[in-house]
Image (cartoon, rainbow, N blue to C red; front, top):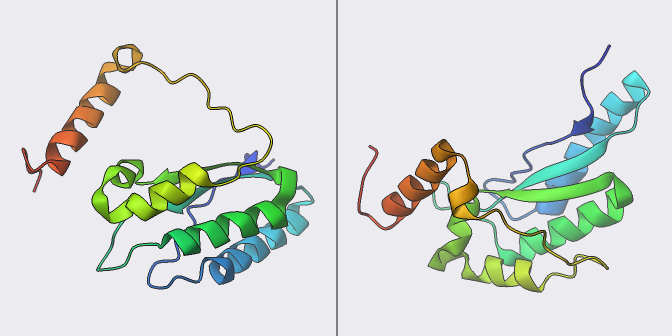
Length: 142
């Protein structure tokens, strides 16, 4: 028995801007797994929105990568998200944020009603507040 109900890879092409090359390799690798166990999976892909050792994704590389995933996986791509979402609010990622806001996600561009901050579980609220304070240089976790 396999416990997998979908594919949820972290698709980080660190060190280059060749998202399509990296995503092709990722899809081929998971495709071999699908053949091996005779199943087809839905995909929910985590994309990079962070900096590491001077590297960060460009808006162009993310846009190409998202379009490639949508074209290649079709309806099997059930969602994308980003690591680290909070960094999208920083100056370094303003071009990425602008691209994501303007990206044509298809017919249903509606955003579900957001959960109000007060309705989040307390640990989640503290995590959000802590990240905000750290990003503004008020506290340092190191």
